[in-house]
Amino acid sequence: MSLDYILTLITFSNIFAILSLSLNILIGYAGQVSLGHAAFFGIGAYTSAILAAKFGVGYWWTLLASVLISGAVGLLLGLPSLRVKHDFLVLATIGINFVVVSIFKYIDFFGGPYGIVGIPMAKIFGKDLSTPGFSLYTTIWLVAVILFDMYLNKVYVRYGFEAVKENEKAAESIGVSVPLFKIYAFTISGALAGLAGNLWTYQMGMVFPDDFSFGVSVSILTMLVLGGMGTTSGPILGAYTLTFLPEALRFIQDYRMLLYGLIIVLVMMYQPSGLLGKGGILRKLFKR
Image (tube, rainbow, N blue to C red; front, top):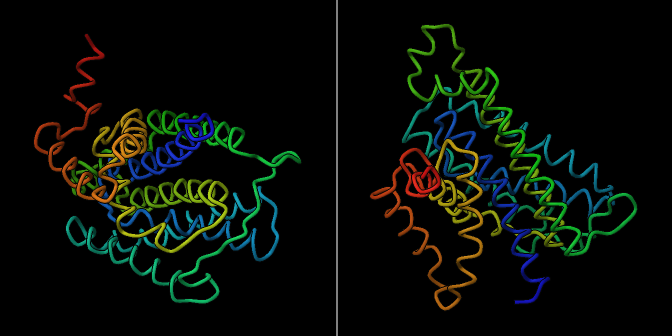
């Protein structure tokens, strides 16, 4: 494999690691199960694509808009979580994913099934970022998200998330505002997914509705489950593993979703906390 190809894989791994970390805040920390995370990813990506390709907006503004709009939509879509729980929340988030993709696909403003093309390279400090530079740039953002995740683990918000995840009624009894912390989780998670969407747009130079389909939501969840929910390192391990693994197994490329499904089943059976989660095989190995 050429150096540019490896750097491109690293770029995609970084983007999916950010996505996996963002979903971890929602599921691993706050216990709000979602199977529609690609919707936030797509909203961030299309926000950047429209602003850059149709209106000529500069990179930093598209980045800010992607984060803010995806976070705002996360806040709005978090409202149903106040009324539905568990299985019904899963179904609601799946539906949201399909609705968002349908909007992209069937409304001309969003490019319809042909998507949006002709997105310029990200220009940072007056320089276009090609493959090596953009790979480094996404790595910097991944490190920033990791630091934010570590900070989140040390402040009161994380304890609120944990209380909501463990027992909502018990959390309310000790004065924790369950609705507020659910909204926090959806908003933060959506904003970080919007950041990943911005990076995806400028890496690809184009966006299409199917880039953010339900299958992508399943892939993000698989990465999180494989690495270990509720940890910082687990989502990163899962993202890198499931980005590089299909490249090593190209001969079964057409069966990627089958592979992901098998991984989820096997991990749930034998490593329910993930490879780096509590009791995970790799976590035990590193502690030796």
